[in-house]
Image 1 (spheres, rainbow, N blue to C red):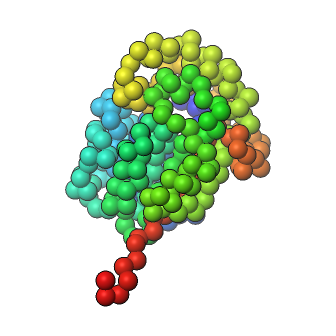
Image 2: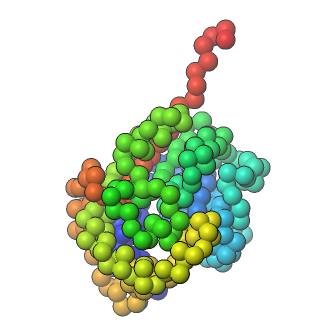
Image 3: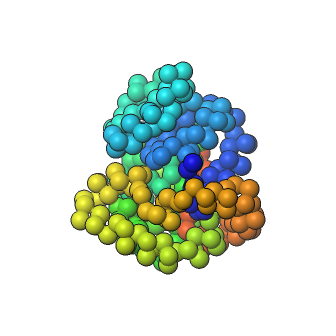
Length: 266
């Protein structure tokens, strides 16, 4: 029985709510991790393709979603999304989604991600992203996971404007739960994963989707009694109440790209 961390549960609950307002279609997910978002997309009627730099992550995804892959609802590709070809998937997609991915990219790759994503979307397609927020909360976990930045609302809006996208929805998530747990989280990560600081940034990125830190990323099954969507509802409502807080450690955004309008006769 998988028991998810409280912050992860709050993010997934918010995503579930937002997905209810989006008609299902085809998706591209960059960096699927253990497949929690993939699972929710498939459950909501979506089909699509996941990309990850780690062959082990993709192998785990294939094992978890064998039935969906055999049914043609899911493709799992080991490789860099930015170097992929549109022919890797059957057709363009209606949504590109990533969770804790963009912060691993340097400025050049970040801009390339935004530009390339436009070419993989159908007209009217959207991007959904979850990124770490609040630079003043930079911690050892950022270093160990191979992060390059934490975002602010303004830096995210600036990125979108500069690459031809428009943010249609923006919300801070996991406040105040993750903030209260932040010191404990840093302690657990430093104690269990400090050796990863010796790895290259690329290897830290590859490992970031497969982590095993007791009481941080993994919990005893008995805690499912307390860490589940029903018991987290009060904290979920509080999260929504403080969705505009600059202290939120996660930012959720939905964005649409704005095709350039070519004047008649030009």
